[in-house]
Image (cartoon, rainbow, N blue to C red):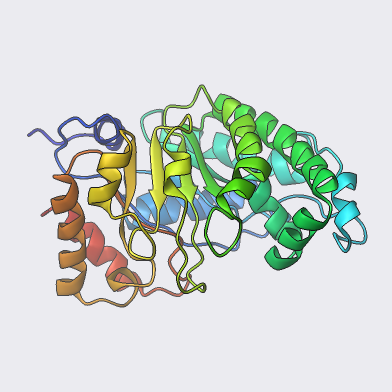
Length: 318
């Protein structure tokens, strides 16, 4: 097969069509010191210059991600006091600057996605997760008021992100695991606000939902089936950390699958034989269709680049 461009390769993979090779993406966090242009520079250097990956993923590394209310979220009732944030706020405007800079420098063909936490996921950043869950159960009305504010703000942001040149969003959904919320709680406190945000990204062709499992929580099992009808093109999860397997996921959804490599596995510590075996197993489970080969979550920032380069070299030979 003739060599494909990254954009054509990713589009074909998502649609289940033949590809010259499976698309590849991996990532870790940067320290851009609050500048969208600086984050764009780190992003180009990592995703294109060093590793020539098929997707350029803008990491959520521009701090603050969302303004913390004065006094924080010390009490359950405080969630009702979250204030709206406009696109002109620094936490949003610098993300849009990063997208525009990337698109101007990389051209129109490359897939660019903006990483964004779901409203519930952002609540877990504004307060410790255990505290936020306790508040959710103590004062549901106040907590939901805060989620409504976050969802309205993020819907506006993702619409602006697509207009600025993003191909879609990488929407990280936290809490949908047996060790965090019950399935019924997730349906009430997360899903309606997830869908509100995703409605703002409907003009993007590469919207991805990441169902997050915490590597530090032994026995985490995600509620994968709650996401199979989300209005996105791709589902991402840590298939090596939690179910389902890639083979199982193929039977649960017709969407593209973004998984296959462990974020704390051969991609981070080698060796080459183990990394090749992991990548080949992912391709074997899917027959190379509907697959974007990727880590389940961010690899450690100090991962030796030797193994990342090895993965990039090996994908051409799968």
